[in-house]
Image (cartoon, rainbow, N blue to C red; front, side, top):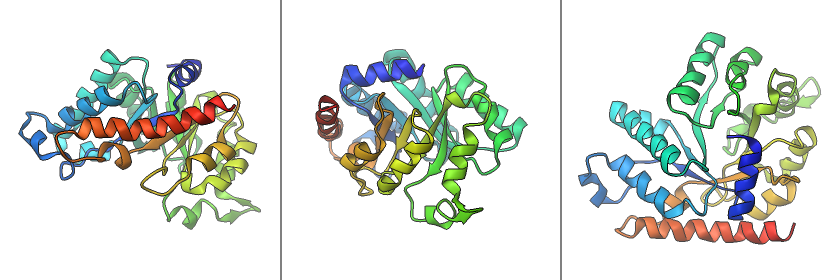
Length: 272
């Protein structure tokens, strides 16, 4: 998917909502455990109930890898279902990969060619040669971890090195890499006041923003500091939507939670 296609979808749906499909078998409704593939059954109903409200879905691969082959198969079925029934939806493999060149090339093939995701999250710590193999794929997007929403982000990401915080060095250096136009960045909603500094370095890039909702991030603050002329934001919510109910009505309740966020987004977009 091209960036322009993503922007067009945002304007069409009046939404920049990304829904995280972080499926925990201990949290999904009990009646689904009787299904042949409970994880896929859960995802399918969530997707069908919310696809008109979201522009992106983001399965966190750890929640599938934890269940071995059956989990990976559920991930495969989920992305196949999305690509076939809702091809306009932007898909993100939240895999946080990043290794030496040959290994990164194989990771990129796994997510971009075999599974056909539009984007994958990548850790920048090993530098240029660990990221550029992902950037080589046309109309695919590499979402670099820049400033994350967890408490441990302060251990390294905001520390001063050679007179500048590390996350700023990551942002600046990444813009020099080959095909850097295919980069997006993760910036946590709990770091909303940093967004203006992020935007000063990468004014045109899309930002994937987790942490709104269950982690306490403010949608209004994220938009105030992070939005650009092309919107430039994908705001992710996972637990606050997919686990809004554990009953038979879980999909409808998830849709209501998604719609609450979408309506807030629409107000912001209409005011631009």
